[in-house]
Image (cartoon, rainbow, N blue to C red; front, side, top):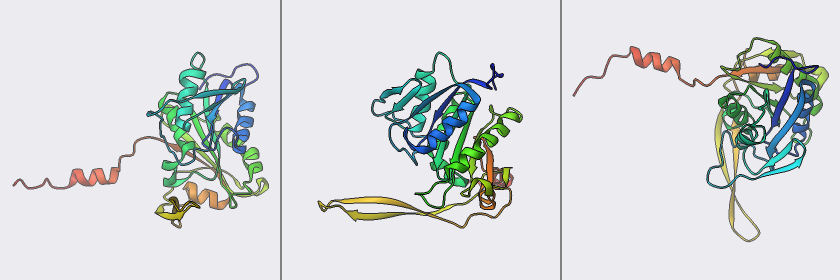
Length: 266
């Protein structure tokens, strides 16, 4: 990581998200960044881009609008925003850190593969920038406990930054539980759990002009009970910090295949 500069740890931080440039969670991430950096730059989608993972816009132009000094909206995905931020907006002086979030809703277990918040952090990592994804769990979509994120994310991010520098090997995924700030039991280092999507339903509806349209609905399993998982940590009321790498090899399967006798020749 970059050495501290003057009174702040960093000179520049880039903040993005997937909920859009006007989302309340983005303001929380900006506040976290402001405590760490002399300059906070925002490059975020101009509208909600939840669930787009690492999608890139390559079949149509991407447009950039400057909303205020160091604040930009992009007609694209979170990954597009990171590419635009690093490759254009801040190309002459890249940020020391990329923060993605704060997402409305947890990004844990296998479901991180769908997350635009996580997708932005992955893209930053692939472009050689240290990155942290930030998410706030909730029980009621209309009552997200943003005060909990505001209270605990500065501590969680500081714990990551104060530890050994592993940003060449991974990015970090931080989730805040759906409880009041005073009810959080602490911060835990976790692994990615296995709470699975047991199915995706397609709901067919008809609009007022009698044209069909569709909604996708995710069905979730109960989730694993392993105490060191991100799923279990949030259930306990703890903030979860998970380092996420990129080797998706199924090692046990690879070992089993390697030890199996070769197939007989015809």
